[in-house]
Amino acid sequence: MSSQPPHPTVLIPGPIEYDDEVLKAMSHYSEPHTAVPFVKVFGETLTMLRQLFQTTNPNSQPFVINGSGTLGWDQVAANLAERGDDVLVLHTGYFADSFADCFETYGVKATQLKAPIGDRPQLDEVEKALKEKEYKILTVTHTDTSTGVLSEIKALSELVHRVSPNTLVVVDGVCSVACEEIRFDDWGIDVVLTATQKAIGVPAGLSILMASERAIERFRARSTPPPSYYGSWKNWLPVMQNYEAKKPSYFATPSPQLIHALHTSLTQILSRPLEERFRLHKEASQKVKKAVAELGLKQLPTKPENEANGMTAIYLPEGLTPPEILPKLIAKGIIFAGGLHKEIATKYIRFGHMGVSVTDPKRDDLDKAIKALKEGLAEVSQK
Ligand SMILES: *Cc1c(COP(=O)(O)O)cnc(C)c1O
Image (cartoon, rainbow, N blue to C red):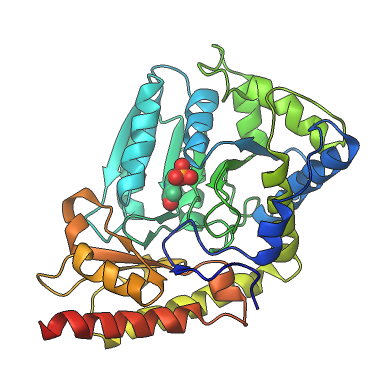
């Protein structure tokens, strides 16, 4: 039995449901952020992230900084690009617009390569774009949380290395790290940025980022200082390196309680093979997608290979809007999210299936949610 008070099950694409042990880790007693016990926990957390991202290169660099996933965009824009640089942003939904906006804030010129809703830019289109201009960075959203569209990181990264070898490959993995396969070294990725509250299963509040050796070299070779203070790797790089070497260090106060929770969650995640975790998310996703099809509903992604495994974006029956169905689901103990993509926001809902809702065999969250959706749709169609 969960030690949490009864509450509707949160099945949105983040924040997700949390494990009891993770929540308990957050009520850790106070300790100075420079005290030996906490330095050890922070250091171990950084080392465990290397395993989660599947990097064994000692010169890859993990960062864990108080903030949300959005701070990862600022870190990339402020540390890896310079004013006037060109970057290519692959667009599969809402989050690419925001990443592009973040680049523009720092005077970096973001060109977006857009696909129709439900699709992703094709490799030949990306190749053509890369040949037209010298881009410092290419960004891709692994799972765009507004559309449930999955991008293919491995093939894309191979393409970038072949066609435009100086372009850094940056992956927005906020909705994919810990539920979709990511092989940082093998796939030649330069940055994966993420956050705690999605598949990692820790309350919101930490920006997590892995940078490649090449990305750190690019940062060190900048001709101008990073145009950010809090987000500058000049300030954070020594702190992260010191913590991992179990030496106290300070730039800005970390959140020991959140780090404890992250340490607990990573320990749980890494206690099982990652392949098994990704397989469980695939199976859960197939189950949800099959149930959605059986209800006669369509998904936003237009092809099976475009479908994310941590969430499902579902078109509502013609004429039905999220405010008509979501409260009915809450009454049945299930929280889904409404649409987020501007052009079609009133036409669809989003069902997140990540973390303990998928991996904890004691929970029946997904069955409950599928049943609630079926009953809720039957109720509204009777009117
Ligand atoms: C949630 C999300 C973000 C933003 O993360 P915050 O923690 O809300 O700042 C960025 N990118 C993707 C793909 C996301 O799903």
